Image (cartoon, rainbow, N blue to C red; front, side):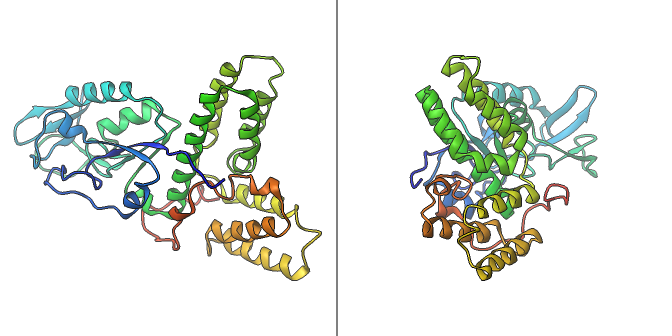
Length: 328
């Protein structure tokens, strides 16, 4: 489990690739820089693609009787149809993509945080919505990993995103084999990960792998892919991850001393209350899997879902806050 296939990720071009923001600047993002050697990026600036220059007059989203419109107040130009046409063409052209990293607050790329207004004139925003390009992305690829640069500064969201894009890249490699034997191995290696995300989907995927109906491998893989992507969509609940961690502890419980068990439970309690990251707990279990030569646990992507060099040593505490429900 030391080699990871490279995920294919569409990214806003202004995030370190080109000075194409409306003000002629580029955003230098440390996470994107670190990720660059591990993924295949496809950089795009939707606003430049529809003919807007750099720098360029501001565009804003306007609420109208015809729905959300993208207007350039200084020229009066309505860019809505051009942006929607480009979005459709660009997304139609994509093959085998695992995720998107878009620019926050952008009227084209913002994910739920782009301001919209009553009209092109200056005034208070009516609320927040998604940019036109981002909206098309989410509708076209509802189960892929789609985030923005601001949210990815949050440790939990960042690790969730990384887990998904690398799992989806492995899934792409699996589909190329079209082999039931390969599917069985893939599913076995992802059991703990799926258990941490969605036990109901795990059982459904297990039934697909059993293939009682003797369907063709390609048919099974098609349904498996859709269900697997759906299973990994929501941020995993802390309680579900703790369930997996306790399940893994059972592999060593008879061999551990009482002091070792108490230490593990103390670390687990710290994770439960948000005082330490998940990595602190999985590292203990991983060391025991090596100590007791548990080949099965060493083969579980739950413990090493993406390259270790992408792990953060600290929780930045930045990014949009997560609701208590999403972290329960």
